[in-house]
Length: 518
Image 1: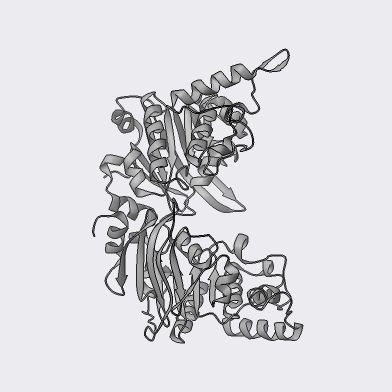
Image 2: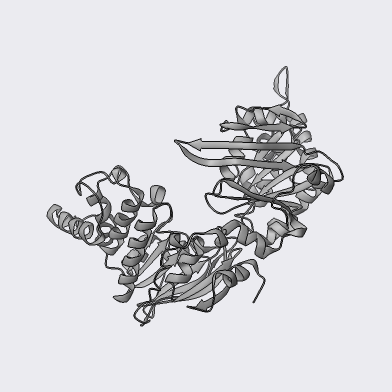
């Protein structure tokens, strides 16, 4: 198969129709780091074009270039054959490029009609023409087969209806291109059906639609064409009907092109000493619209891996296990005793630690020192009224700096001055200081160099051998395969199989993720 459908062949696939929107040779860098390199994209009228890629692939950056948030360093954007250079989202919208974001960017306290026309209220000499605005709002929603009271406040309606209101607002400015950025991430199955009915209607009216998602099932249900980005580079553009799920997953992950030296643990196969007692068990744990119910058990002395693409439910499951998000079904027991985690504090008290995938937003407190970051979870566990003496804090921090090889001039240095790998080690130290029975590691090696990755994973395996239960989550599939004693493969927010070490390899795990085997 050709990597990209281009030029005359692309037009031939569309009956000779030219693209509504075309991007060519798009480059964008931040501080010398390339986010996009020679990226192209074509959106045709009457098509749903899905943009896919792993975390960090460049999807968000490309959308921001397209909508005027970022100016490309080089390259061109053409709308209906004419070169454009939108310098803001407002200018892009005036040109006919409208965007609906994952988080509905509306005002829940205002009426449906007000939200559709906010900032563009129809007026008359006495002020806002409320009657005209409400009639126009009813017509716009009616075109999408949505019939609701437009005078009611937006917060009366479920998220799916709010998405329809956001789409109606986007279409109210004579849009030629509609961009939907992860619109289904918080919708349940029935709500997704409603959204897709609307998209099919808009497609039939000739709208060019860019749909950004990480759900495979949804991609193949709604897409006419698929563009894949990987590490800021265009991997290819394909007709959806000609691209198998296995090939799509492989193009997103790029396993076949990864140098062996970059695979953590490729030169040795670390193993836990052997599984012991069940530390934590979850039965039917789930949350509507976020994660289908799961049955899980985590054993002492074992690395349990979660494997799947971005959005598969890996992090969502970890957050439910830790009480960071509230489950609406299922139960959890720790060492055979039923528990209820209403907050992360409850999980910490039960001996559970959690290194978040977002070390800047949910991990490191950048304004605090290395010492303060390391003792943070321990202080939370024993309570704020029982302050850990300064000398004890220093001893704890120094011990872990030495053991984990954290490179810092001093434990009082701000953690923001450390490299990414050393920040990650400091966060690992934070949870080890609490002496947890189970440690959840969500993307512990993301964004750090190969040597730091190996050092962190060596420490993880050592902890496992000492009897700790480890939940290891990584988007690097070879990492999960080589470090896990057992692994759960997730796809589209539900489990699709649990496997022991050696049952899957690089190719067969992609088949499971793609849904091409049981």
